[in-house]
Length: 120
Image (tube, rainbow, N blue to C red; front, side, top):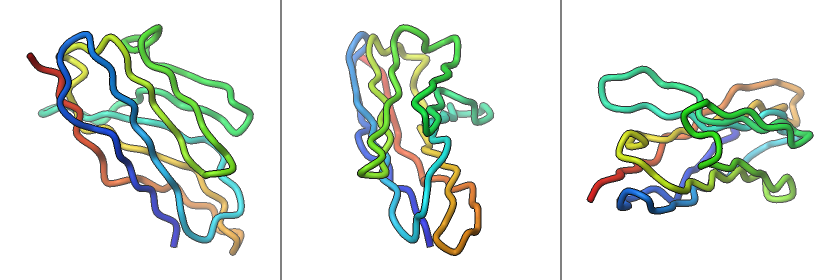
């Protein structure tokens, strides 16, 4: 059973930075796309950033120039460096991965989320 575990959330002042991490573990053969999504109170979950296995990236317009997604394939880990944080970035951030298991079953896996609060 593959699982994703996020870490790095917390309380930060406006203008500050946080780095989120998400590690995948279990019976993994290969991970294709990995991504971060966020869900603010009363809103739907939305895309923040995606990175492919070839390191191509896509960002939501709201985070371009402030957030950077990266991955370490040897560690099955994806990161989200969040700079110049704004109160509107406050949300639960979820990690997502498109995983091919050793059983050759493909699964779309979600983490349980980590809360980011931007407030003075």
